[in-house]
Length: 159
Image (tube, rainbow, N blue to C red; front, side, top):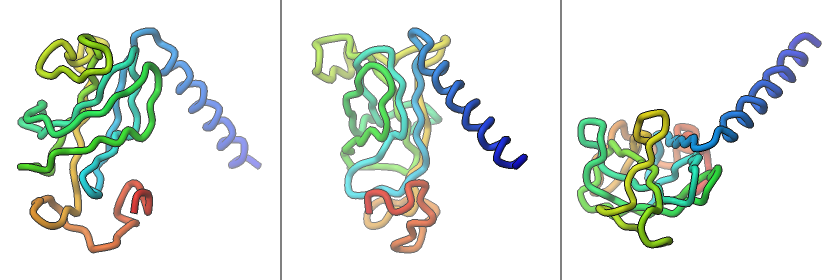
C-alpha cells in the first residue's frame, strides 16, 4: 500500500509540475535525446514554444549550431515528437536543435534572416544530442548491433 501511495504522489507531482511548466507565459524549452538515425530524419522529443516557429537541426561545432541540416515547423504551445528531415551531406554524430521564432514571412523558414533563435530566461533555447549506431557513409559512435531496438531510447518506434 505504501508503494502505491508513493506512486500516486509521484504522478500527481509530475502532472502538476508539467502543468506549471507549460503555463508560464513566454517560457520556451526543447528536448532531444541521443538516437539512431532512421532514413533521413531525426526526432526532437519535445518543444514548448511561446508562438509558432521552427526547430532547426545543425551540426554541433563546439556545442553551438554549425551548418544547418534541416528544419520543421512547430505551433505555439507544446509539440511532441517533431520529425525533422535532414540533408545528410557531411553529417556528424553531434547535433544541436534550436527553437526559432517565425518572425519574418509567416510559414516561410528564413535562416539566416529574421527567424532568429528564441531566447528564454536569458539563454538561447537549444538542445544538444547525438546520433548513435549509424551505418553506411555516416561515421557515428558507438556502433550498435543491427536491429537493436533495446539500445534505442525509442525502442521499436519508427522501425
